[in-house]
Image 1 (cartoon, rainbow, N blue to C red):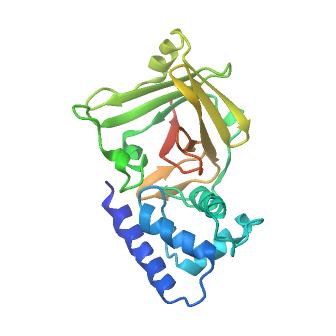
Image 2: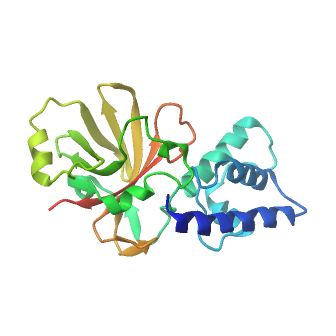
Image 3: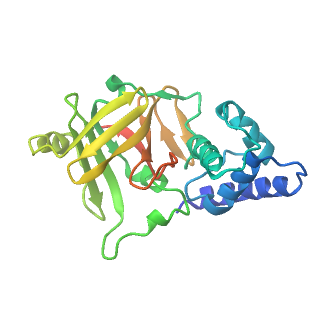
Length: 247
């Protein structure tokens, strides 16, 4: 796992916990927030740098419209949790000036999740890092979004070579097993013949270059968060992809 992420975000969570302990008047939103970070910090939630309970709480205010912070029902807790999971996924929040929701034109093409970015695939402490026995680790991942809705995904494991555009184009001749379409700008749904429940991804295009833990995100790159899958009803991001267009 990336030790830099673990160290920085671990310190930030300590700041949030300390801030909560020093707060006398804590509403239900803050209590749900602290409980979530105690249970899910660095697994499915990652705080921005220099965060405190108050700054995180303030950043969520505009997203909590219609949610009563004093109603302590499970339904209300789930609504608050959905807002928090949506706003603060790992490895970083998509609420950045450098990103905007992707359009179909942004998405179409052949892409690669490079080897350097695979370390961001899951939260630093996510249980999903535990590989299946006997399976080598993921090296890189090729993804093709065709304009006709065909979706192709190729994973290179261990020492296998990463796929090229030529490899991805050759696969288009195979029987179609997965499709994609946009529910709206920035929200993509995929359907697979072997998967009864569709997946949904939040997907953004980089408009201004930036860096995160020494990884460069260039203009035109995509960042995607898997938000909907079997058993996930709270918009939790369980997989992250940094996609670079294949030449």
